[in-house]
Image (cartoon, rainbow, N blue to C red; front, side, top):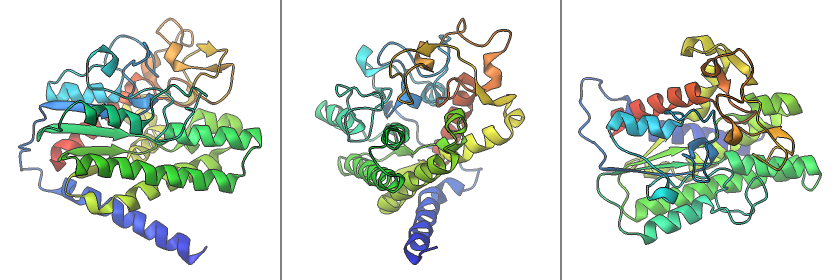
Length: 317
């Protein structure tokens, strides 16, 4: 194990500590912060239906985690396409194009932020949620599968994406954002996709390296930024789903096969953006399943993460 790797890992752990320390204060202190507006930038896991549907079981309820955060604050949250402030869109990458499904027209996270900043100033009581990484890892994995890059090249590209993501967080803080929650990639090595392709180790490494670079690159922003570790909670839900009111963390519950590129893991794969309660496995309760498709979580897991994120925000700000 190289000294450089140890140093980077140590810096990442220090970054996590710095960005989480303020969340560990006394539970007797009532949070004084109540956001006037919730603004979301991100990828498919945070997409409220920018393109018409969501990457989960589309049951018409609170099935995306950012909705749960908004609900706990009593705020409305709608897609930017419908006049709201949730810019998150499926398959988008941090700054690279095309997206994970090969579409060059999809706005990157960087472009989502461009549009928001051009629309007016950031309010002192705005809560900004910035999520990313998953689609970049999917896109880079596709190149490895196609034989157009090596695994080492994939990891280097993912690390750069982590640094690019941190630069966008810094950009928001520099523009006046005082309350920013950042979410990196959950552990894609624990997904049904990783199991089906026997790429658990590579995808875990890619997820970890993305998050490490993100944390190291924004460690000095702790006064305004809260990092919420999605990998930690999702790994717990996957390891012991019964502790979270679910029973299956192995199989995707949706059956909605997409003949096209779908979520970027290949043609002819289940795409939860096409999934409704009528396109799930027969005779099952889809709320018992952690995963909707091979990558994206179902409504129950989304709500669990939303509640956890809200608690972290409430305790921090």
